[in-house]
Amino acid sequence: MKRKSGKSGVSRRDFLKTGALAGAAVATGGGALTAGVVRASEKAKRRRKRGSLVLVNGRIHTMDDRGSVVSSVAIRGGRFVEVGHGARDMDNARVIDLRGRTVVPGLVESHTHFVSLANRPGYHVAQWELANSIAEVLGFLAARRRDVPAGQFITAMGAGTPTYFAENRLPTLAEIDAVVPDRPVFLYQGGGGPARTNTMGQAFFESATAPLAGPCVVQADGSLMTVAGVNHANRALYHLRVRQTFDDKRRSALDAQKYSASVGVTTVLDETLVAVATGTLDPASLDPLPTHALFNLNHFRMYDAWLALHREQKTLIRLQINFLHNQGFISALGDLDHQLPELRERLKNQFPLFGDDMLRTGGIGEWAAPFALPSNADGHAVWRESQRLVAKAGWRNGNAQTGSTVPPASAGVDGIEQVILAYEAVDAEFGIKHLRWGLQHADHATPDQLSRLIKLNCGVSMSGFRWNTRNPPRADGLPVGARFRQILDSGIQAGLHQDGVHIAAHNPWFALHYATTGLNLLGQNINPGQQISRQEAMHAYTRGGAWFMNRDKDLGSIEEGKLADLVVLDKDYFRVSDADMRTIRPILTVVDGKIVHDTGVLDDRGHHHDDEEDDDDDGGGRGKGK
Image (tube, rainbow, N blue to C red; front, side, top):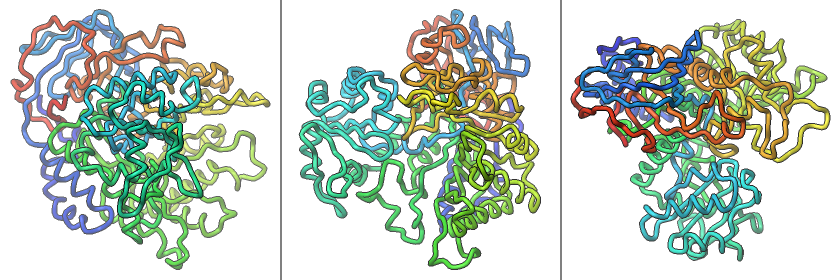
């Protein structure tokens, strides 16, 4: 099947035309990624060979406009070529009998910080976010131990833990030793610690030295915490980061993608990380420092390993990158025309929505500058100017605000109101309606605010992670958020996200459960009156997320011509109990027409062919990567 150039990002001719510009961009702060995307995408555009796949006898929820449910689908060249009740058994195709299993499109995570998970030091255990107890955490650590070389760390970090565990704490040194006595282990809580280690880890951290830090203080129970003003969890993280090789980072990036495929997320809109504000003003601050938390990485080099995998056609999921800029008002830079140096360089030397089907740039976000209310005159002026610069450059833009739980006494203190006022101003000056600007979280957006966003052709990505609390419902009976029902009833384009991987899990089924039940970790309804149907929630995690990323013509539904991403589930999401819905896991995940996750549950009795036999010249593929 020949792919139309409009379906696959930038053409080969366009890459060649922009190659010289991208090369020049390497010398600037934001140019390294542009040049990397050019090199990787040019290779991915070459002629490749791809097999065909036919799935039959399933309950395939296409998420098309009619809500069609079909029994079979055929895939060739990384796209759906037939969708219906009789998709043909194509010559030399691999045929998989779904035996009645439920299938949904690949889930689109429209707000995440996935690059952090893709840079974890050690042999990381992302699965710990699925644990409900200390015993289950220990089980995941023991399972990981089987493929970890001697002397190498087993790590588990972030994800909102240990709130998820019944004990509401991390395992102790003795508990970790009981299951992994012969490998060092490091568990790091949330985005900034504290942390825990075992006996072997303790021995390492208490003797570790590096150019910028000496040994760590480890408590008797294995805790690394803040002592005398020193965050020893972050110091320990530093000791692991400075010892990471590039091969370690490649493995970490691939492990993160494998985990994402295992929970059904096939596309991520990465909002990067909280960049160090000094950045290019102080290049030394970009390298690992003993004070850096889990959410601090070199924001110019954090994608290097992913880019290398992409060049080798080994990536498993799709990545779209938003660029977060963290420079607020800096008095030493003088007037407004000299503020925001990194944002200005980014807008001059990179391109929005640039790349191929597996890896591309996105827009500016989670913010272009730290948000500040008008009461902070200098900070607010810089934030407003950042919105102007993005609009003038013609980039997509996004801001994260939750809004007020009660009507504010003044619009000046409501973050969402300030965002909309800024959007309206730059639309009047430059025009942004064609750019699909966004608002992330939007928990308490009012009907009037949503209406004004619709007029600007803006979408929202709704918070799906408010479930990860043990706090009781509000005493006044108001919803904690997001107000899913109110948001969807407004008619605005809406995605659903988890905002992992520091404050929350990456697993999307937790967010889908919360959006449809309103239940927190203790089973209490903290979001009364704001529940939506399972169909609506799935739409938000597929079609809605794709729209939010400007990729609705290629992703979000199982329709002929669209990119072939789908997930076969172990339970029927649309029919199982609420409790069981939260525990759904994919048994098979397909991205770009390739199986990237397979639990072996489906006994593949169909006929096979070598995946390299089908010679399709298409631009969206990868290698097997499995």
